[in-house]
Image 1 (cartoon, rainbow, N blue to C red):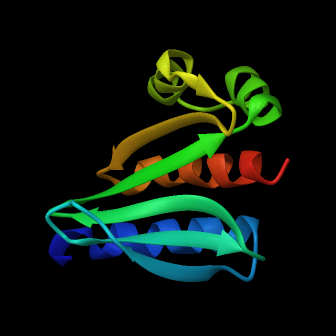
Image 2 (image 1 turned 90 degrees about the vertical axis):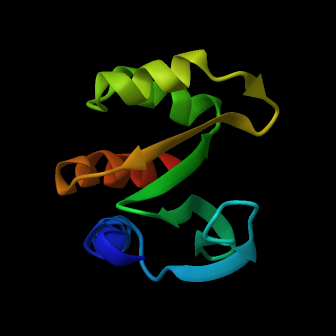
Length: 117
């Protein structure tokens, strides 16, 4: 994981601060790392995390209520743009973005908060 390790720890800590305890389930992935981590609470997947060189990819699926709250809430404009452009499915709108600096961790915590609405 290299330089992305502090980001990884930060994401886990931010998510754990919102909803605890979290289970980590590793699944095979077609990414260069070869694995992705599902952060779950009581069997419900909150985030999908994929380590990469110098960054951590975060994926999340927000249902209708959570999407509306996200668009009205304090998320960064870039994440709102991704959500607005995401195709709606029965499960919700899914987005994926890279976390490259610690300043992005509050947005990840906000997404976890939205997942538990």
